[in-house]
Image (cartoon, rainbow, N blue to C red; front, side, top):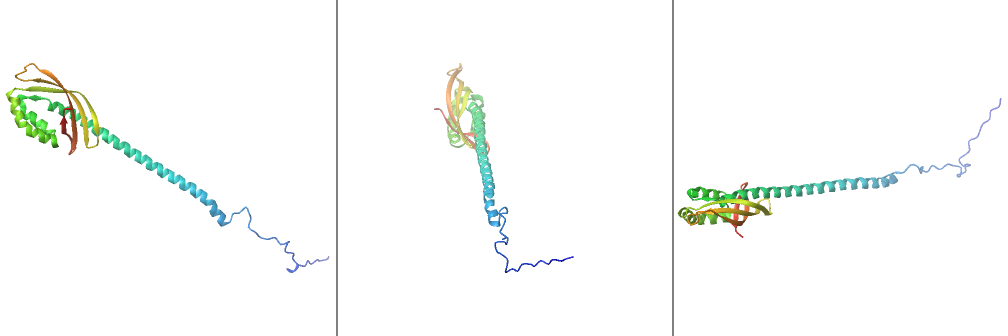
Length: 196
């Protein structure tokens, strides 16, 4: 039986070319390469978030605009209907109920028109009573000319049958009325009435 003893090479005898150098494996990225690869991913995520926020903001703005337009349209329709009702009050009179008629007209008026009607009603009252005047107005057509949430201009076509002591048989007067309606304390009232 023989025993062989191998001699470990001295470090002085080792050829440096034979030594396996321990360099980082190219398949495993180092920290700087890992961080560099995360930037494109972070950029994509940031871009998606930014696009989502922009889309949300745009849809919110468009929704707000549509709501505002709905509010204006609704105000226009409410004011138009009130103007139709008011025009019929304004163009109808019964000499036996003059004070009641005037009270209804003043109740639906505001601003410039209310002031003007209040001043002229004193003289008009006596004239209507003396002539036994009677009138009945009917709105045959109406349309909104312009509208905001608080102010609406309405165009009205009115047929009014009129009679008095001089003209006992009623005659039909056709007139156009331009009425500016204002929202006062949540109620539409006539601020200006014009006969163009």
